[in-house]
Structures are given as C-alpha cells and as structure tokens.
Amino acid sequence: MNDDNRPSDKAFQDYYPDNVSHCYGCGRLNPDGLQIKTHWDGDETVTRYLPRPYHTAIPGFVYGGVLASLIDCHGTGTAAAAAYRAEGRAMDTEPAFRYVTASLHVDYLKPTPAGIELELRGRIKELKGRKVIVEVNLLAEGVATVRGEVVAVQMPKTFLAS
Amino acid sequence: MNDDNRPSDKAFQDYYPDNVSHCYGCGRLNPDGLQIKTHWDGDETVTRYLPRPYHTAIPGFVYGGVLASLIDCHGTGTAAAAAYRAEGRAMDTEPAFRYVTASLHVDYLKPTPAGIELELRGRIKELKGRKVIVEVNLLAEGVATVRGEVVAVQMPKTFLAS
Image (cartoon, rainbow over all chains, first blue to last red; front, side, top):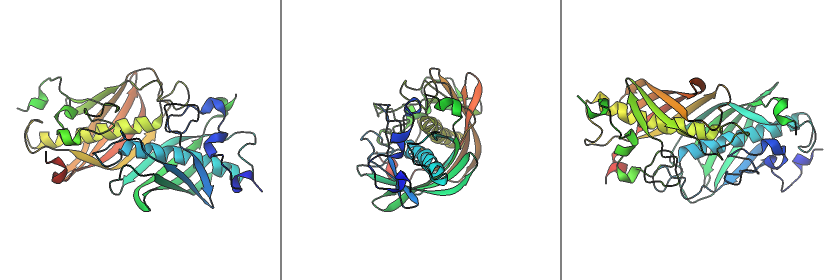
C-alpha cells in the first residue's frame, strides 16, 4: 500500500526535490509563486486555488493565463503522482519523478468568476513511457468553466540530481 | 491609410477602452500585471517582454505558464488589431474591438532561457466573423522555443460600453 493512497497533508508538490521546487506555479521554494498544492481523490487529482485580486481578465473574472498556469502545474503534478502510483511507490521514495510540459491545450468554456476558491480536477488519460497525458477540469462553484489537457514528459534525470 | 500602419509609440493595448484594460496580462490599468505591448511589423505583430526574476520554471529557465500568458494576450491583441485593419480603421476609432480567448494551444519546443528579453511574433491564420485565429512564435535570441495558437473571439459589445 502506498503512502499516497492514505490521507496526508503533504501535497504532490511537497515531495518535489529542492532543486526543482522553484517553479512559479507550483514550487514551494518560490515565495512569489502560486504554490499550488495537489492531492489524490480516488483516481482523480484535486487542486484548490483562490486567485489573487489582481489576477483579472475583466473586472469580476479571472485571467485566462493564470487559469492556464494552474492547469499546467496541476497537470505536471498529476503526471508525477501517477508515475509513482504506476510503479507502486510512495512519493518520498527514490528515484524522484518530476515532469515538464510538452504541450498545453486550454478551452475557455465560460468566464471564471473572481473572488472564489477554484477547484481543478485531473484525470490520467494516458501513461506510456516517459509521457503522461492529463485531462483537467477547472470548476467554479461546481461549474466547469475551463477544460485543459496537459502532455507532460519526464524531466531528464540530470535536473533531478541534488 | 490607417494610423496603425504608421510608426507609433502607442501599442495595441494602449487603445483598449478603460473598462477592459485591467487584464493581468495586457491591461495598462493593472499595476501588478505584465502590461505587454504589441505593435505591427508589416503583416506580423511583435511583443517584447523581459520575464521577472521569479518567473522561474527550473532555475535559469522561464515558467511555461507565463509564456502561455504572453501568447494569450499577444493573440487577443493581434486579433483586435487585425479586425481594425480588416475594416480599414485606425485603432482609436469607434466601435472598439476587444477580443477574449476561446482556446489556447501551446507547444513547448525547448526550455526558454531566463534573463533575456523574449520576442513574440504573431501571424493571422484566419479572420472570419467574430473569430480570429492567431499563430504565435516565441523567440529567445532568435530561436523559437515555444509555439502557440490562440482562437480569439470578439468580446460582447455590452462589456465595451464605457
């Protein structure tokens, strides 16, 4: 049984090696960054994020580039967690998995309201070799406002040496 | 002859009506935002942007979500400028054009180095009715590191009433 299937306060991103934890979207060592936190919820992955007041598209709605960023890092985090799970390993075991984005597709279905905590839910569409494809729905009060797909590839091992 | 074909210090974004100028990516009235500025260069559009030091992916390289944001707002700005041009109107004439993103696709071709001014170059792929498709190349020292496509649709007129 993996640790990552038990309830835990630690998010996927908390297991990233220090030298790959400066990402503006998800690095716990980037004090200016969004610092998203992602967890398993059954076979889905969940991130909750309250956009900053200045993450504006037009007043009252959230900027699409920030939503794309959330989907991006939710996707790479989900990819890493899925890779550990596929190997039957907990996320604190070696070697570390860390993914980068090869491509990102985002469909903006409707405006995303500002001032509320958003929920991203990810699902593994494909896991094959060094590539993971993650589908992401972004919801505002239960309504999907944005849909994304992230093609993530495993970061070269040379980046992961600490 | 349109004003937008003559050399001008004013960028596309400087013509956006005030009430749609708070965008985090391109709004001149968002003091925390990226405030990108886009101009014509013949049939292409150009934005230059120096990422902030904390826009990190891994140290030394720029965060993909910020690059997606640049492509997004470069795309909507290009869409607006192309719509004025198609009507043979200068960007300071009424009615105002302002576009939102329906979908965004980004391919990360190689890591984008930090610490240098990036160049985005846009090209109109399609302009039909209320929809404009813009292809964008993002270059670092002349090398394309990211390629994007933005499907932009005209913002409803109700948003543009000042």
